[in-house]
Image (cartoon, rainbow, N blue to C red; front, side, top):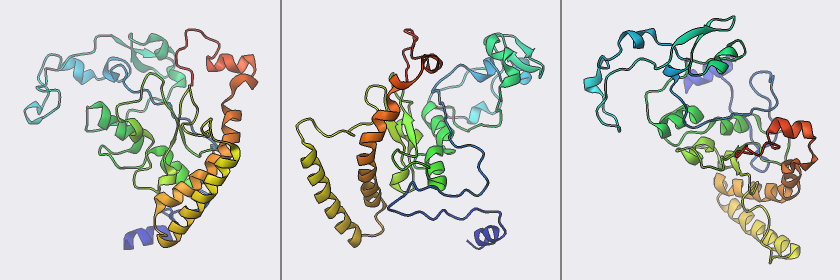
Length: 285
């Protein structure tokens, strides 16, 4: 704690953001001057092998057919490990930068001058679920906040009518780690990602068909009174504060979400960029 205090006083450690529990998504100033207003992370669960495609390993080629060094001490879910195998495709230098990319992905290789290959992101797990945890939270175990939760916790949002952090799920199914990819972890509950889907943008946003507007407003008024009364008794309950704020946000989202998710107002050129005009496109966010 003393070290943290010294680093913060010296300007080397950011102070925790001051967050109004009633307006958790209010915009906040970051530790550094921002250069981006929005961040979109496209996470593709499962993929081709990096050592067969863009991660050139001359030592792996040299040790083809040999046992993995230290293999006798490894314990995996997959059982006993086999011998090392060289890539099945030939690597060649691509573009002006000379990046070594295999013949498995020649078209991607031709774009190497425009691609940032990040080889420093590694993990000690070779299993999909824990690996997804590392990608989204930076840690193998469950329970840590995702990158979107950290961003909304630190910076808030410029709009108060939409969630500061949304997760657009793949209609074919979620990654193995599921909601861990947009969890708030140990941060307050209001920084959890809001899942969207292609069939129903936000679950349970609209009131039931057999409930009138007046009944809906009356129910929310009573519920709000009960929640606020409970909040006064238990001021440290972040889940309740998040629920209160989420009810208020949900009321605003009933108007804002249909507007921002309706692509009919977009031009044909924009729809073409989305791929929405392609009948073969089965994954339309």
